[in-house]
Image (cartoon, rainbow, N blue to C red):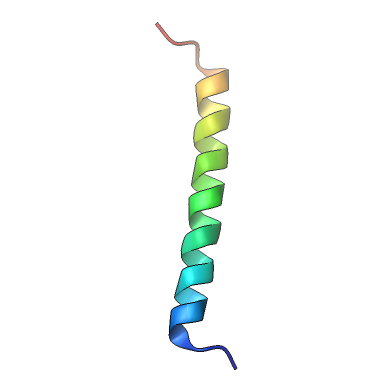
Length: 33
């Protein structure tokens, strides 16, 4: 059984990596200017 802090940390890391992935895709799809 994991403790609460470990679960929250993993969820935050996953959410951060997923958001960075989508932000990176959005910046490539949308031309800047």
